[in-house]
Length: 428
Image (cartoon, rainbow, N blue to C red; front, side, top):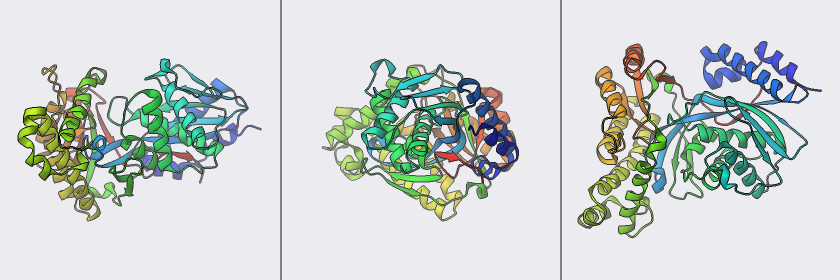
């Protein structure tokens, strides 16, 4: 017998409220009740009401420290946020995974063919197929399911909606077919595999790890097969600041060459120094060879390498500042990171169209509003997209008003750090 009615009644009676408050904050419980009710009803409209359903969630992430360091095996500081993808899912007897995401065409993946399909490159179907394939390769159980998903993770915002989707699929398979035996780190690695091999995007592991593990974490990618992950104990709610992400707009699809140039130029420097990645050498070795680097790789490549060395070291200092409850020192380090990204990494605007400098403008406005308090920096890959701002609570109204007057209503998003990653939602 279906449990749909039972779950809807439990949502209405507040049986999920403790979990919802933990994930989204106490002030969001009633809106999240409605969101999950709508998701359940949408599932029923698509698949019928005869299924036993389960509820799932996977968060977006924010990169706090380590801008463009992970692809050179560096260190990062990241966190899951309260924007997420939620899913209503049920096991089925057919050898197929059916995913209907709100606003998109359905993905139907036959489990008897989990090979790479080139026609699915850059499509969500490839992520579903890739996650299922990797589960099977690792010896985990895979079976049929039908699911409805809906997301409030902003696409193109640097909050990693694709990683959240991959982690959500992995979390569903984990709980529906493996009794939760697959740990969060393994789900992150599975998700990265799907994105690299099936989706065709050579991403690092930071996005998937932050979404799967949740909370505030620092990751050392010196050994990318076995990254060192550590939770950072700090409650941002006591800092007196809000995390504000400002979406300045811009088309990321037109910036692929800019992102590739960052990786390629850092690679040219590391290769000249006789190593594969900058993490495998030192700043002192870099200085010794700087004249040759300038001649062979160019000044921008040298500056980008300098950014790596500085931001990689800065991560540990940011972690220490948070763990020592010194938010002022943390903000200074965030500001230093932002300057390094702007001046050395040079990922704030594209030289292909210097008329569009939304990130530069957002950072300039933020500095005026903050007036020496808090911090601001580029968020994520850069060249377009979003800025990250730690805004004193008393300045949040002015900050939001200023940003939305320039970048449009709804462009400034006030986020909170989520204490957990990909999870099955259960009643308390």
